[in-house]
Image 1 (cartoon, rainbow, N blue to C red):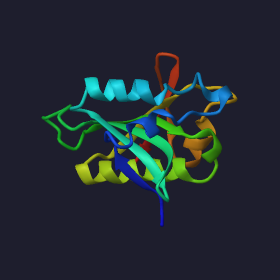
Image 2: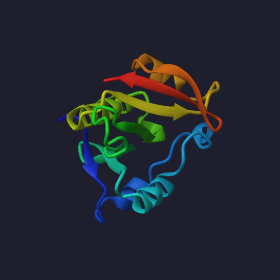
Image 3: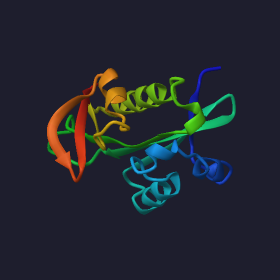
Image 4: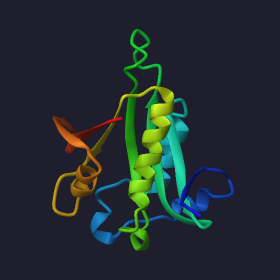
Length: 152
């Protein structure tokens, strides 16, 4: 059975919050609990999902889906890969690739033409991962993070 995305519910929220990355990656992505707090505060745009394989939580994904961002141009949907956390012992097994593809499919279904994300540059950062998936640097910065974009 392939991995799947599940909505965050009272039944799986603690499992989601227990997902942590490798120690050297801790400063590169916010803890899942913080992501869920941000999703709670912005329910109109947050799309949090638990990544599950064989009923085992392996990661967390949160998209930013602002469909009403530019009502004058419905094809210009502002969409972000807001958070992606793959459990330390599950990295390198394709779950990140699966999650990005699932978010991209959801965005295509909603009419988006591109997916944007940010990451902290550096030797322990995820740039190689995102570049292998087809993201290209836009030349922009968001705080201390670079911005990458993927055409859908």
